[in-house]
Length: 412
Image 1: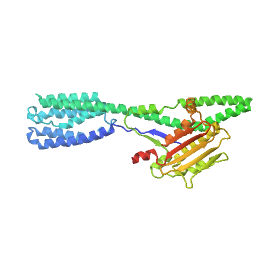
Image 2: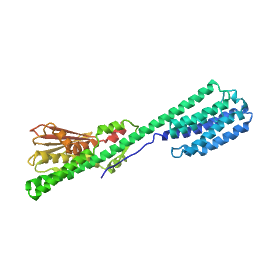
Image 3: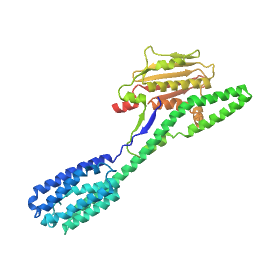
Image 4: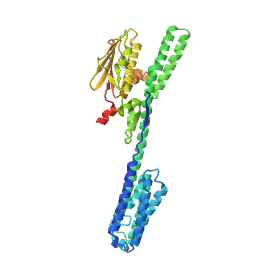
């Protein structure tokens, strides 16, 4: 069945949001325990209790807000920063000695969670904005800040900006790779369509051109028009393809995002309920008076999708024999069933292919070998090797692994 491709985008931010959620809960518990074990130092314990109650309720009720970038709105970030700053500034009211003795504030390290939310949401500029307010609040709370105070303030400021910068870089990489994979998916689909066009439309147009020229008269004009359309279609097909090397360079700039192929056969194979197909049944119809078919005595089993693509590549190779080697040329199809792969060899006794002819044909938009044969085998994780000696015929060796690339990578 027809294959469709889609790109699954995996957000690099989501693990950061989950980590922030856990951080807020753990630091909330830590701040409460600090206040419980240090309750004797508070001259106004009711101030500490009131703030801690507010902080605990705020943290628990706003957990959905820090679950993702969409739910974490600017309004929430502003209110969360206000709660954190209020806890810092209320510390001297609960503990009169807080300005003279270095010690934790009421929210303690819970405050950093608010700054980190700014960093993940908006990048390093937002992080610098929030951490600056926290720094000012800590200096005001201390009254006469010590070196330790400046050290802690600077640490939070630098760390939050660094995290914000990393988030921005990750976002840019994700966008770059997502775009590269979209291009790759579209290119693979264009290659598939180009193969189908070459195997059907282009060959029909070429046949109409040859027959029209041979018949003459009005048929010759029809053949000329078919030839013009063939050239135009070949140009369109070849110009619409993106070189693989360029895609590799684009993909190298990003992070890991996986392209998932939605194919009924491959999906069934991954789910463990794939059926298999005997390749011999697909290749046997090619046997005839001028085409010999040599097959193993046992079934040659492959997934249906792989078997159909391999059979189509063999058909394309035989089409090349008929077109380029002549109607009197003989062809042989040999199927070998190896433990790890299936090898199909198509050989003819034609004049062979002159050196450099394949590259010239590909430049002219004639992509029979490049797409219909090598392109198909590449998509299957196999290889296609063409050996031709002028005057001694041509041999095309097609190799397809019995284990798909996806399974091989998973096993690795």
